[in-house]
Image (tube, rainbow over all chains, first blue to last red; front, side, top):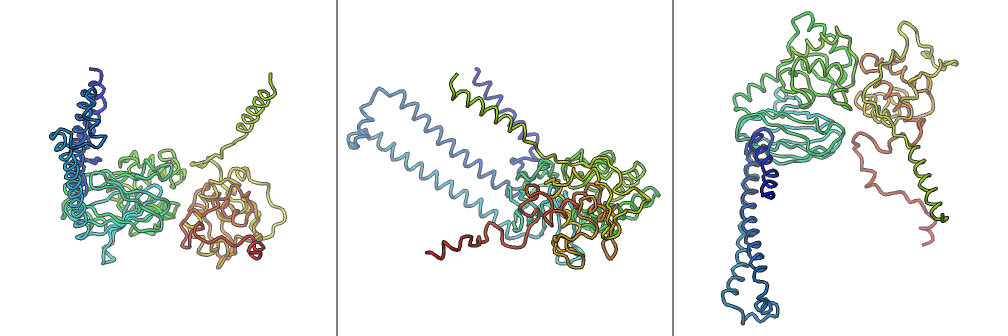
Amino acid sequence: MKLASCAKAAVLPLLVGACQYQRYQSDFGRAGVEDRDFLTLFWIFLGVCAFMYVLVIAFLLAGIARRNRALEANIVESGRHHESHPLMRSGLIGWGALIGVGLIGLTIASFFADRSMAEAARNDKLSVTITGNQWWWDIVYNSADASKTLRTANELHLPVGVPTHIILHSGDVIHSFWVPSLAGKQDLIPGRENGITVVPKVTGMFRGQCAEFCGTQHAHMSLVVVVESYPDFLNWWHHQLQPAPVPRTPLAMAGYKYVVSGPCSACHNIGGTPASGQIAPDLTHLASRRSLAAGTLPMSTGNLYGWVEDPQSLKPGVKMPTIGLEPDQLHAVVAYLETLK
Amino acid sequence: MSSRFRASVLLIGAAALTLSACNREEHHSRAKPIGETVPAGESPPTIFPGSSNPPPLDVRASFYDNNANAISQGQQLYMQMNCVGCHSHGGGGMGPPLMDDEWRYGERIDQIATTIAEGRPNGMPAWRGKLTEDQIWDLAAYVRSLSGLPSKDAVSSRSESMSAGTPQTLTAHPETNNSDAAQQ
């Protein structure tokens, strides 16, 4: 009774977790080709191994139950096999054959999973370069046409069904790119190029997370992945390629003046303005994103106020300094940032 | 009471005393609310090279000087703000070298911070308003470390940024004991 309730307590949260986050951030999301292949492989391995395990335990229990009949055990141990029961001999040979068949089955299953992923990697249609930084993701959509090359940050948009090759770099320390619903982990290593191909199979929103400890704000280094239909993706791309809109209200105009002449522009880039820093996330279409500071906060006016005024209290150690804006400057800067749709 | 017992008690006492002397360096992620480096409207007295009577040491100097965190943050800023463009990695180029012992506007950290904040004639831009006070002091701490002024234990032995060269762990160590090699 007690054992059963213990087992329930251990397994139930796992099951609930698997259901609730089935899509958003889960290895059981089945939202990408690699994830599906691996999950299928996982279930096959689990089934085969569980079957063998149950069999071994059953024989062990039977052996314990028959422990007093030591005669037959002695026959096997002393090598006098010809004296043993014929049923016992064929049982042992069958056991060996079962192990062989099981292992060959697992090898074949993993071979096909491997080929399926290699096939996806060979047919990539889209190339994205992601650079991990402490503690945000720099995302560049590569294109042969330089005017179509797009730089954004912390929000990755992917077209559904299109194999996308993601080139992984690091700007400082080792990070790891991990969108569990789509694919496995891949490290971003400073000075080296790494890569992973993802093929999203369903539309939706997924969460990615840095999976290699990279400093104090490692936990706040997440990535929103939006998988959408191909036309939606192209619309998004074309919209993101536009320069930042010109501010219309006097307040936003004042914010614009502060942003392009003050400390913001030393690090941040805003397309179509003199702000052209390259060491911090691109802000050209900041307000169109779903999160702030690499998934630390959801995008909202209040959070923008908090973040711009005092990033160090929301994400201590982040490279963005607390500048100490005066209230009127803060109102203006937030008003301007909100126009960056 | 045996002498061995007394010795171990003494040892534990000494260890506890030593531990209490350990002082972890404070990492500041937020600048303290501090005033301007130079009072507004007043011309800094160190603007002229070779000034003979520098002002008293700024109170913030002790906070940033010999602070390992400030030095490594300053090192990152040095690369990010492209100080390398003129000063190279300390060797100088279009701008004066920073790794020698010649300081036109003073070698103290507050004097260097003022130089960064206000700019200097013949090319050094003013960073006031582009960087925060905290960042300027971090940079000054790093610039000072280029010429080996801060204590060794505060200065990082490796670069914060990636280097294009062979990692130090892979380069051959220079022969340190030539006499041994000659004897063989």
